[in-house]
Image (cartoon, rainbow, N blue to C red; front, top):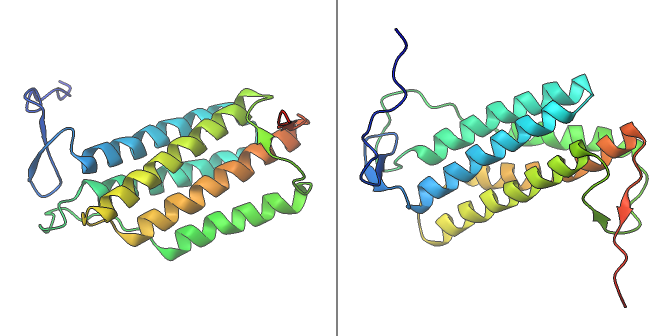
Length: 186
């Protein structure tokens, strides 16, 4: 028999952090890790539209790191969790930088602002980038409210949004899709 996914414990608008602390579902910590969860789903969509197997492997690694980020954000920093929570490492950020550097070696220099579009993989990568930036803003908001956020989480999300931008350009380049320049009305 399958385990039921519903517990009914959140029916009154509260949920538990890792560590057992109950908070309203509207709490910034919940909103923040919910945004990271949304980002993880968008990364899955990007992967589904990506023809490149190496990129699919990289995106799966990113999804794994986003579960790590979500776990970190879901913890009550005042309590020691009973379970072992994975941690983010500086090498995770270096991995993104290495991947960006490799893609940038094949890309032409940017000479204009680029509009999202041209292919679903490109557009979805831009959507993921935007959600990533929102997750980063949520983390910074927590920090500004003196709610603990692991500093490496903010750094990782910042670098990930850069990666997703480069990825959108790289996917277009790989598929022979011309970038759409923004032509401001003057």
